Image (tube, rainbow, N blue to C red; front, side, top):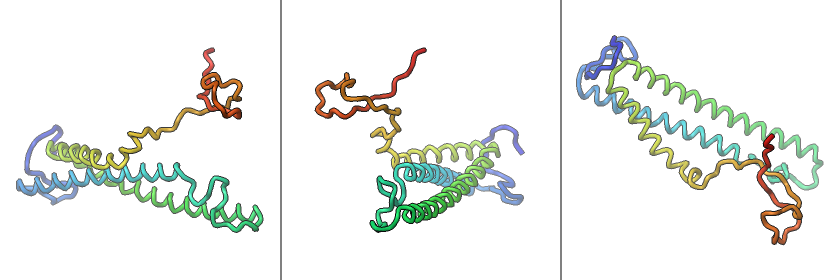
Length: 186
């Protein structure tokens, strides 16, 4: 086993005893496989982040008042609240199981790629890093509108009475304005 990087088309005992690569085409196909596995890992990473954004962007199954859109109007509030709790709990459990499954796959692929890089074959390292770059380039396009539009969470806002609204004194709304929270410089 090599303890420093080397470039060779011959690899013995790759991942398992007896898994030997002795031809150039075998090395090329193995590098393409590692590259595609690295692209898939980036895809799983983006999919997990998109699921987290989805869960944070909307409350599943409820409207702005916290009640289900399908609930009858004449039911008591406690019955509606219990039914909504059960519905949301079930959806959260399904979401959590999906997140755990994606995490498991992402972790497994990551460890396999790490083992390939730790074989100190330069071709494997180039394939893994190149695949991660290609995967990031391809899958980051799915999140590009969010990055361009700046969907980052804004700073917390505080409510100010209209007579203290010094930024917009000509506003016709006399109820309140939202300003960024002041920082104390003490």
